[in-house]
Length: 156
Image 1 (spheres, helix red, strand yellow):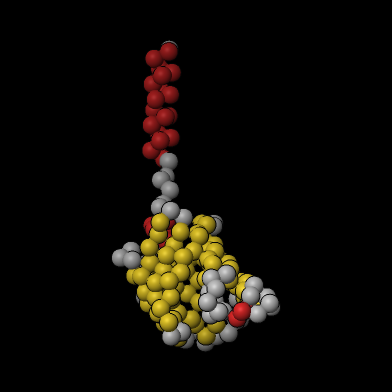
Image 2 (cartoon, rainbow, N blue to C red):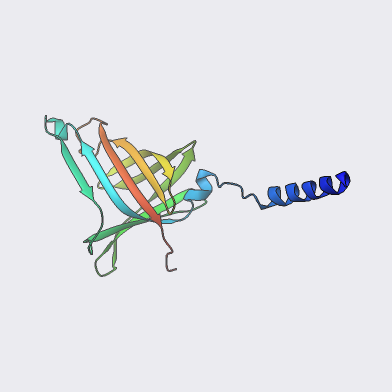
């Protein structure tokens, strides 16, 4: 009887271990297509003034633009916007990588080379990224960006 119990316990243990799914690495998780669903940029010394400027967009109610991106397994990525008619514009390409819980991007945008780093938190259907950067172009890397995304399927 004890042997039968141990046999069942062993079989149950093997079944439990074989059903456990391995969690994806951040690189595996990020290798996909995404759409920004929320963005907030807090600029505490807006262009070297004592004024705080906050930009926030929830991309609700048929927004003028939607931002999408695709991260490829070879370390390349592209990001673009869609207008209300679904027309693509503003494409930018670059390279990406991860280290720990951080996403690193390098690309050319708005007349300058951009190097950004985001702390990434996986969410149920996407990710949240936080980044300190010089968004107001005043020379100070004191602006906080918070971005939320959702995973999307792109038409190829």
